[in-house]
Image (cartoon, rainbow, N blue to C red; front, top):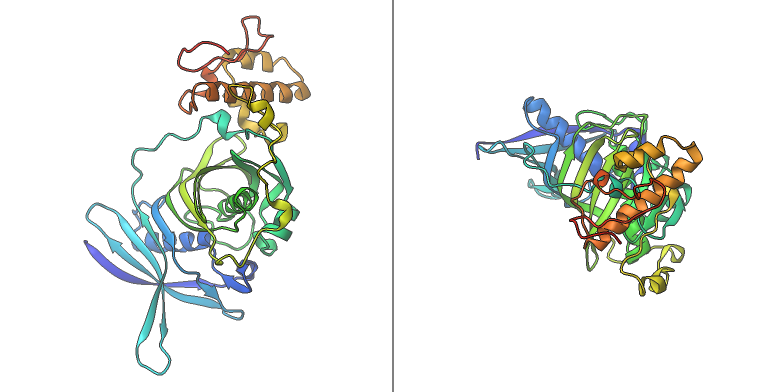
Length: 378
């Protein structure tokens, strides 16, 4: 270790923060913790790499007192020769009746230069959701599933959930939250709400974020703008869920990516999902069809992002441009469905670029389902 220092960290408690509560207690959100630690690191080390975060853990809630004007905490920073920075949010409080103090670690995150990036999902899988979707209006999300106050209700419109993940529009609210140095905290927070709803739907638990493996910010999100989020369930272990998350802008540019987000039931089973959200074993209307098919793919047209046109091949795009807006939407949905189906028939291909999967016959009228890897056409 090259250096260890404890930096004072004063966090003003603006009214919007009091909308983030759990079991009657106001708690500092994980996205705010990351923003404050990154800002503290940047103030101390202006050249530090802060937009690549790794191995974060949120070990204890940092509660906010009802009338607290400020949280007095510390950023315990460790600087390593490799350039890695380990940052801990800690609080210090006196132990009643003694001269001793109690130190609590609330969160840990490592800031480091970005290494070689793991390939993400291809654009067709990022811009639409495969499977029979369950639609939840955002007002229902916040009244029943994620009951935060108005400042933290930043999913817009409906969210869509299927066994293969979820999609939603998330908004960068214009509250006095700091937007530097990581961008608006609200789009990622909204994406976490979608992941929470997915866990309630398919695994019947109310899960909170407890850590992640990596977060990369390519271009910080901006207050006042709306983004498209895609959550992908990676694994389920007991009461723990793991997701990857991508947040794109309306042009299809990737703004940030979270890998290995771990969410867990931290209530000890006290908080349970309402009955209406729970998916039961026999809910899949495609199950019977699937028994007689090599693969099945269905895409809800309302889950398709505006930038999904980037998934089209040159020939598909040529035909797309000659259509009216209404026909374009259904044509695009059909192409995406065939690309999903093609990947399934190839054994779960996530490598082939979407534009390489051409789903039209030579006449540019009849559909085809090629199998990546030169394995023919289904």
